Amino acid sequence: MPLTPFFSAIVEKCGNFTANFLRRRLYCSTSTNRRNLYSRISPLGDPSISVVPVLDKWIEEGNAVNGPQLQRIIKILRSRKRFTQALQVSEWMSSKEVCPISPRDEAVQLDLIGRVRGVDSAERYFESVSDGDKTWKPHGALLNCYVREGLVDKSLSQMQKMKEMGFVSSLNYNNIMCLYAQTNQLEKVPGVLELMKEDGVSPDIVSYRICINSYGARSDLVNVEKLLEEMEGEPHIGTDWMTYSMVANLYIKAGLKEKALVCLKKCEDKADKRNAIAYNHLISHYAGLGSKRAMMRLWKLQKTNCKKQLNREYITMLGCLVKLGDLDQAEKVLGEWQLSGNTYDFRVPNILLIGYSLRGLTEKAETLLQSMVEKGKTPTPNSWAIIASGYVVKENMEKAFQCMKEAVAVHAENKGWRPKVDIISSILRWASNNKDISEVEDFVNSLKTVISLNRDMYLSLIKMYVRCGKDVDGILESMKADSIELDEEIKEVLDLRLQ
Image 1: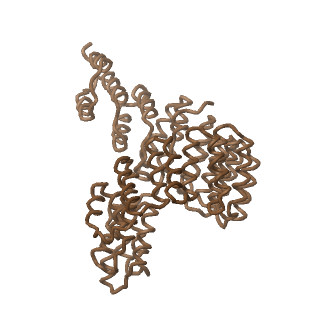
Image 2 (image 1 turned 30 degrees about the vertical axis):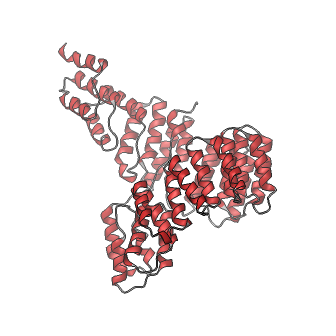
Image 3 (image 1 turned 120 degrees about the vertical axis):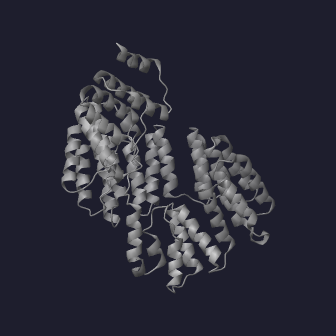
């Protein structure tokens, strides 16, 4: 069965969401028992919750605080993309003057301001830094802000200033290469690498990786190989498993299986045997080559050499098995996951649900999901949406309708979830012709909490209302609010009321 657009484009964006008042209650009831500052901040994952009261209370209780402690907290929050809260800690550290603020601290704060409040705010903060503190670190942070926003002229101007001040390093040249890559000027990337050498700045392994990727994106494998050979010949740079993984992926995409296998062998030799991420890369690449035997060998090694397989590892392995169509083995791996004691993340079984639905085994997918529900697990809306889409493909619209109702009902489990518009349109078109009007209205009302209705959805409702002789003024008002104009087809349907 050919892949449908829904399944080929599906992106898993599942997560655990807890109401704000529960988080606040958790903080109020347990904060005094927490032994260190970060253990109080960590549970406050909602970015709308300020961590400043936590910091103030820590001091009020007579606890000590120091620069390294706060820097570590900021680093952890940044790594977890909790930038707003990281900025709050950084600004609190500055305002309370609990420790000396270094140019490094100012650079971190500048970067966070750029992420949270935008480039203009970052520029204003940079200007407020004293001339004596405007070392290469704040200058580099400002450059990074410009690059992140794709501001070519400002980035190049800032880079030139830094060169004139003697502040540049390989990191800054790498930033400019990334700038050209993200602005689709890939042909300029190699020139930056050469300029770096001419300026007496030694490229690092990241410099070479960026350049190799730029050649790969242009399918220039000849220069990829030249650059890889250059890396291998530079003792102070060398190569690592990630570089070989990257090149292997380029070969796989180009259909050069033998060259890919050579790179994968080097990748495996270079990788730390306890590095789960390296195994994930290797397993994915062998799946791309259709080599199940190599995948299973590496999966066995991973389980032997790594302490524990995280959900990430199971997602990789299941995805690769589904890609190869080996659903029997995928079922066995899912069984291992269910016994692993890992957090019950529905992104894991969703992969097998997709595998079943892709191959027309939608009933089997629903049975699997229902078995999890019976065990007390609450699926994400995407789990039900996967099955609903499978039933749409099989033209079992009654089942599709019921599954999509289930998906909307558990929207609270992932408020970022949005159903596929074409799937909803198909279901609503069928329901408006085959279901009781009150049931369709209930479905639409619940659906409005998730997405806005489009023109096709409104057309289905109008047809149903006209057929049932029901007033459509409310629908027309909603269409107007959603900026959807009456086209000729809709007007023709509305004219049927007069006949």
